[in-house]
Image (cartoon, rainbow, N blue to C red; front, side, top):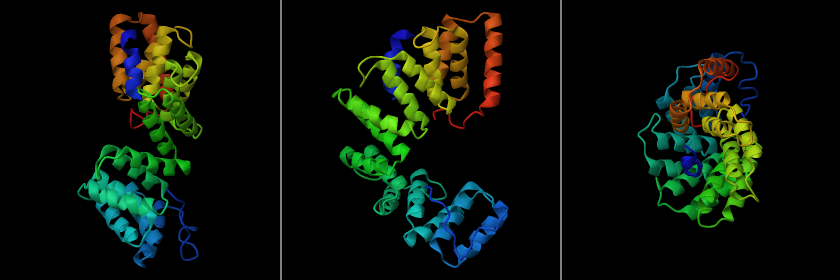
Length: 308
């Protein structure tokens, strides 16, 4: 298992508030249904912000059954009037095929309109369009420029994207690891669990740092795990299994591997299978570990996406 550890480490690596309309669009509403009805009335007058808010109601199923097609309809109305939040979300809808036929080129067009108005989410989207080549010719220079714009507005996801870009550049230019660390740290300070896990990996590998620091790696993995990151749980399990940065503890290793695997993370599943095969717990250890897992899950509802 140790032999593959280094390779695994290398591989891992706005919404705006509602604007008060017509004196008070939602100040007196007390239920999602009442909010929906108020928003519907305002949207029917042609107000772009209300149309955007109505689209979010349909998207999220708040006050009305979820309906992506209806959400897309109101997003188009709002976006056509220049609402950047609607343009950004409409770009996302076209990128994912939500309520519309998926079309990366159209997605890029709407993202660009919002991004050029300064919308950070759309700027992040433009970065991904250029980095993947879906919707535009692949161009990493453009991707980085858009991510930098969004990161400059303190969007954590953009800071993570930049960190991951510079981490990958570190394979050929080790100085890039320091830049990656800086971006991950900025996102981690905002509570981003992906950034926390990546900081843990940098401390474990020593890349971009004077030396390896397993205690710091464990600290960041634990923080990321507590924020729901399944990869971090698998990574923390490895440290317990190997006794690096934490006391060696097979029960703790099993707990973290199992939590990661239960959330659908492939790395966690792989580690759990290998651990159970090569270092099976004794019956009393297994019983204690399973109770710890039950207790943990009672305190931390399982996230919907194991790759968070």
